Image (cartoon, rainbow, N blue to C red; front, side):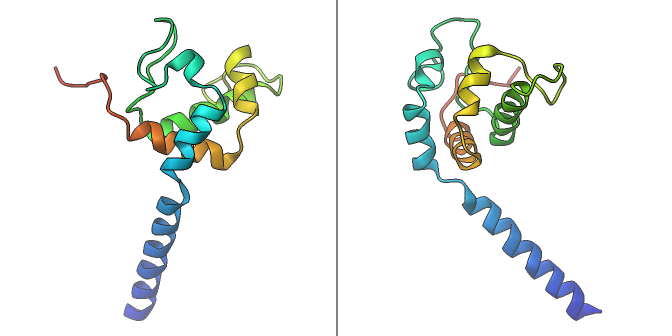
Length: 120
């Protein structure tokens, strides 16, 4: 029984490290630039051109990835929901991203310094 538990624990660690290594920060910065995200969100991802556009810098990677996938799903014609976002600009932009692009961009954005704070 102990051997099985140790094997499962080891497999979990290997899987977790593989997932963590899947994102490439440098590739994320490059993809952010290549897909012209800065045109709305600013080159530093924290100075959007309009107050209506969100500050991305420092957001959690899983939140950014979920949002981008939700914009992709929004292009399918399904009604808006928590998992489907409707926005013609972001939907079109998100459709140009691969899963690797999304993971890399999300990783890069999450590591940026941010003006966002939850300090009160």
